[in-house]
Amino acid sequence: MAPVRLAPVPKLTVTVITRNEGENIGPCLASVAWADELVVIDAGSTDDTVAIARRHSARVEVRSWPGYGAQRNYAASIASNDWILTIDADERVSPELAAEIKNVLATEPARRGYRMPRVTWYLGRWIRGTDWYPDYQVRLYDRHAGHWNDRRVHESIALDGEPGLLHHDLQHFAYRDISHHLSTIDQYTTLAAEQWAEEGRRVSLAGVIVHPPFAFLRNYVLKRGFTQGAAGLLVSLLNSYYVFLKMAKAWELDRSGARGAGRGMRKTQNGALPGTPDPAPRIPDPGARSHR
Image 1: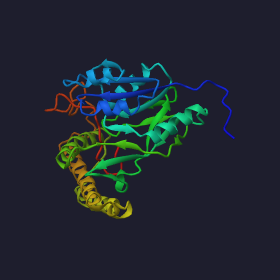
Image 2: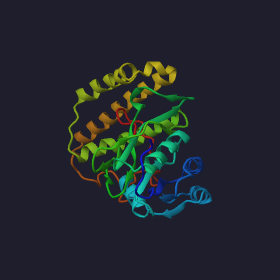
Image 3: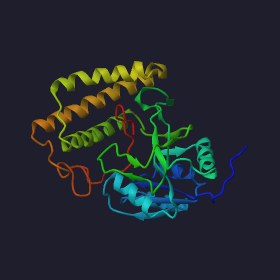
Image 4: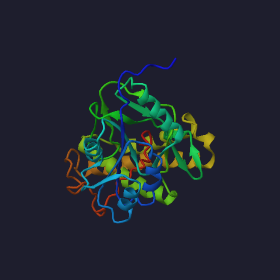
């Protein structure tokens, strides 16, 4: 027997943060067209991201880039509804996940937030192994119970209470090709190394040498990357390379005396890295152990 609902079904706002996501924003918003409200916070796109979003009936605001967590919090703060589903422009909500979300809201949510598995499309297949899967993400939440932190990379939400679990996958189209994957690794290992330096974490040269091989074994053997064909092998290798590059950059910063230098160490005031004045807030995190 279906549970009897005593309160009105809560309405849902979907939020997306963007910059230069003209290739992705259309399919992204089309996958959540069923939601009660679509909110896009754009960090000054120079392509047609804003125009495409408006064609999909999204409410669009252009706002300078304050960092990932701050932008997500702002998007939630201006929503017309308390329940928020936040996704990135390179993600899609499948019909199965959409139905599951609607059902949770229709039968009175038992929790203040919900996590969902995320599956990444890579080299022509869905990757269902390595550190990339199930890659649980808390994306559906009551905004009065959740707040995003301000980490440079791997930002996460602090939720009042334990999240519930949804079972259908959030689809992630992170990388166009291997070259795109490698450039993203370079960008986000810099952010991760700077985060470690701010936190005062020490990295030894021995750690730089030892951790990457273990990351490969974890991805390829323990997390069953070997079941995913050539794509699984490449993901495992590149995840171990991510670990190597992050730790090597952190070791370099430690040697230079940048440890604990604070948030202004390597970024401009709006969060941009030197030499990259227009950081795109699409964050397909290639990171080993936390594929965003």
